[in-house]
Image 1 (cartoon, helix red, strand yellow):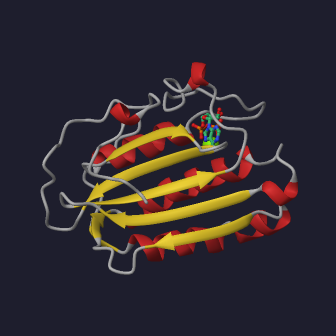
Image 2: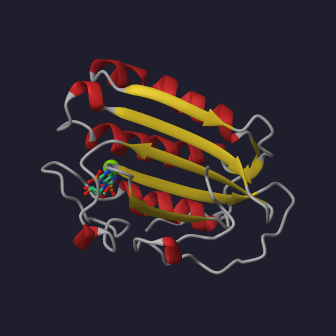
Image 3: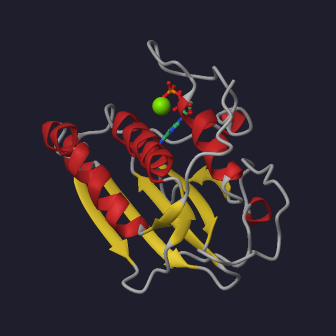
Length: 186
Ligand SMILES: Nc1ncnc2c1ncn2[C@@H]1O[C@H](COP(=O)(O)OP(=O)(O)O)[C@@H](O)[C@H]1O
Ligand SMILES: [Mg+2]
């Protein structure tokens, strides 16, 4: 149903894409008085990717973060997006929010198709994100924020590189075991 093979891939600047998605979502962000911060590595190498698909990934993750903060009082709504080069031919992106967070009982299900905790949710956003990221040779996972909220991360191979591990990532559990160790996202 959701296959992304054969789509055209070019050298993509993830920082540029992150800023584009923040522009696209600016209206919702302002309406909900969300404080946005970015910590984007200036020397981030480009990824080889389908630009539109990656824009969809970032849009889905940012939209989820925005929605997760609806029930949080306005001064405490914060969105932080980080990008960082890895040490094994990867680049990583983290989207952190101060929203409702992820229930432990749901952490293994949230990337499954049609899983939603929202009244009018489709439950397809994260499933599509993971399909796209994995079709690019990357990984995606979620964890609970510290002290609250949620953190979604993904990695992508850098243009022209072959990452050490091509194992599909079956994470989604909490804890460091679920995360590729070479990313620290300081
Ligand atoms: N930033 C987040 N904070 C807390 N929970 C989240 C977040 N993003 C996703 N989720 C959980 O994962 C579920 C699935 O997300 P998604 O696949 O995008 O579908 P939908 O947004 O339609 O519910 C959500 O319903 C929610 O329970
Ligand atoms: Mg969603």
